[in-house]
Each structure stands twice: as C-alpha cells, then as structure tokens.
Length: 637
Image 1: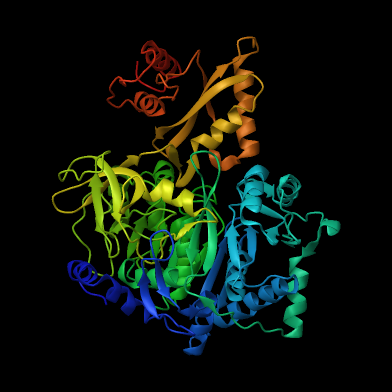
Image 2: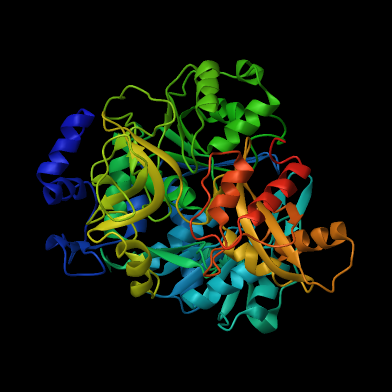
C-alpha cells in the first residue's frame, strides 16, 4: 500500500473501507472480519466486525511462527541503574507467558481489568502483553501519579488485579511506589483481589499479605520452572484491549477505550508508512508507557511490525548529561527516534551548540519525530542543524492513538513548513469550523475537527460512558469528532495547530487538567476560590499557574500558604503536575453568569492580544490580574 502521500491519501478518499480492509490483511486473524465497518455499532461505528484475533499473538507469536524468534524484540536501557538487557521474540514469549500464568492463577480472564503501575522496566511491557494474551483489559497508570489519582482509576475501571513495582527511580532519588499503591487501595471503593509486586533492588517494599500482595518475581519463577504455557485467547476485533485515562476538564478522568482489531491494523500501517522503519530495525519512542505514546510506540506499534523497541529508564538530561539520547542511539543503532519537543528544549538548554552529538556515532539515525505538544520552530531548526536529518513534527492525541497529521517518512517526505505537522493522514478528513459549525476559508483560525467515522486505532468510546463521549466529542459539531484543538489549514492543505480550546494544558508533553488542580487547591482551608491556567514556558511548553482568592479572615503569611498549596497539589496529583507558581489575588475575573475567564487570563499572562469579553462582570478585575502578573515578573511591565 506504500506509495506517495498524494496517491495513498487519494486511495483512502476513494474507498475508505477498501483501504483499511487491505491494511488488515497484514494482521493475523483467527477468524477474518465479516464486515470492515458497521456504522450502526458504537457511538460512531465499529471496525472489523466479527473478526477474531489476539494482540499478543500478533506482537510475539506471529513473528516466531515466521522464523524470526531469535530477532531482538526489546532493548532495556537504564542509566538510572546502569543496566541494559536484550530480549528476543522467543525470550519475550517466555516472560509474557509466565506473567499471564500468574494472572490466570489469580482469576484474571477475558474482559477483566488489570491496572499496571510500574516504572520503565521490561516487566511493565511484559505485563501489558500478558493481559492482551488473556484477553484481559489493561489500564496503565503513570508512576508519577499520586494515590488519589490512582484510586479514581481503580474505582472507574473496577480493577480485579494490580501489577506494581516497589519503586521508581528519578535522578538522585528513589520514589517508593508501594506506599502510594497501598494508600490508593485504602482510598478506593473497589478493592482488587490481589497486587502482584515486583521488588526492585533499590527499595524492597513491605508486602501486605493480608491484602493479597504477591511477590511477582517469585511467582514468575515458579511458572518458568514448571514450564507453564498460556495460549492466546481469541477476542473480537471490537473487544477492548486497554483503557488509558486522560484528564477531564471536571477532574473526573476519561477512560479512553482502544479496541483490539482496529488498533493493530492502524499501528501496523503507521510503522512503515509514517515512520519509515522495516522489520528488524530499532525504533525508539523516548516516552513513558503511562502515556499514549508509550502504548502505541514503545509497546504495540514496533512489536506488531517486527521491530526492536527500546524501553529507556532515564531523562534527556541529567542521566548523566545532555548526550544521553545520542549515546542510546549509537549503542543500539536506533533508526528512528520519537520524543516530545520538551526533551529537545532541555537538551538545547544544556548543550546549545550540540557538542554532545559529536561524541557518538549517530549516523544510523534517519529521522527524528516530535509530538505531544506544539513543536516550536526554533527547536525544530536547532535539531535540524545539529542532526542534519529530517525533523518531523506530527500531531495526534490520546484519543486518536496515532497521527492525525504527519509528514510521512515511509511515503516520501513532503516539503517542511516549520510550525506545521504537515498534512492529514489517511483516515482523517480534517476541516476547520467556526464556533457555529461553519467551514472557514483556508488560513482562518477555528476549531479543528475530523469528519466521522474516525479511522481504525482511534478511541471507540470512554469506558462505560458512551453518552459522555458523545456529549464531549461528537455533539458540538454533528458529523465530526471535536479535537478541542484550534488551528488553521492553509491553501496547501498544511495543518497548523495553535492551541487547545479547553482548559487542558500541555506540560512537558503531559496533558494535565487545570480543573483537577483547582479542585485540589480549593481543598486548602484558607482558599476561598481559585483558577489555574497554563502559561507559556520556553522549556516545558506550558506550566500551570494558580490564582488564589483567600478567605477574608485569613491573615497568614502568603508565602506559607503558597508553599502548602503547591505541596497539596504535589501530594494529590503528583510531581508530574509541575505545579509551582501560585499568585494571590483579591478576586477573579468572571462573566455575569459566574464563569471564570481563564482564557483571557492566559492571554494576559502570555502577552498575547486580547479583547475585553462582552460578558465580563467587572472589567477592572483584569487590570488587577495584569498588575499581579507584572509584579511577579510573568509579563513585561
């Protein structure tokens, strides 16, 4: 199906179902689909109706059956521990089967939900695949999330078992995971049957055997010694593979549901056509398995396509320096690297002349892909200068699971326009609409939407919340999926994504809900009301800033209150929130109906042009907000 971008996109436009039906021929099916697409199933339709398959079989067993079992499948590289390890597809099968046997022994079967709360270690990948092998539904929770966030996810998905690790590692410190997990279970309404805990050398956690805790390493060894095998459970293409929670604007997490069939078909297609890699080559997504990039391009995409994938336990700087990425590329002959612009801003900050690149042989690297937030042109140009390879920005979301718009290396690169992720990929019919739902002329800013149906690989709904999915994603613009991103499409068809249209902010590639942070700020006894906005930051893209209105009878030191609120957010949401800036104000700008004007506050903070909202209750409040921001040096005086 590979060809030029124009030819390929035209093929999809001419026959969408035929396009994806041909792509599905690259996947192993126990029973082929009876129908490629059914518009009457699910909120907008479902793909590959009647097909039976198994994602783990396609990621591992299929390659072994094709005679490539000895090929490297997974490379573990941890500057945090100084360890590296390689696993072939044959060895992966042993590890995954052992964990699947342990899960099966504890009652996990098809359709059961398993939460995975682990750092960037091979066992995290093995656990995801073990769930898929059994037909169970995994929900990976990023290890940086605190107990409250974890508890809400346990409750929402009804987790039967939790797979965890004793700790995670950050530069200069050990982060105990098990106490957070214990606290989460104590808080949660749903109590899992057991917790399978991998003890790491850096921290051995006390196991609560009365709560069903199991030493995972010991349980795995028992299964390996006994030679237990676990066959792949056939599941429908439309059965769920995983739930991945993303922050909701109300603080209530949204469980994005990905199916088995469409997910495999789409991701397998992207590896050759978008990323331009061939089976056997090394692909590295420098992300975390807790995010959608980790799901799609650390685990499933590369393994489906027969690539070797890298799981990296480290940071772009500080483990030990700004040359870490280049060392990994050189050591493992990485052909394509995928990371967030934040990582490159950090590398550029520490190594502005790119001197570290010259210390390593990175000649095998063919392309660098950036996603997760808007890639600013200066960072793109810097990367082009030091690497002298294509630097490819592409745009997608947790909800879509793969690129909405990209410059496809496998189909032949398009001319680069800095600041644009290039053009829509097959499956995505993009339009820009005004708030009333009317198409705007090219080059006009508006709401970026995708014409329904969404292609394979995108979310099919929210977990047990079809109506919430319809209301938040499909109803505002009938016939379209609302991306909640604002941008323009120019006369050449290039997409420029400018900003979010809701209150989700992007901090270092992590989507964070300001609403959730506001809920935590409001928990402080001295706070009467608050607003959190995302402020532009050169390194992280956006950082949260909290505006607090204190209760009238509070006369405590403002600095002490600020410190307590910052710690409260850290405790409840986790360090990933990067919440450090707190400003005290007398009041917040609101509409006459009481809605806080966060968007206007954000424009003031970022120094952008803004208009006085027609519905504002008291315009003087915006002057007060400007004065507070100027006093703290956030905006120019």
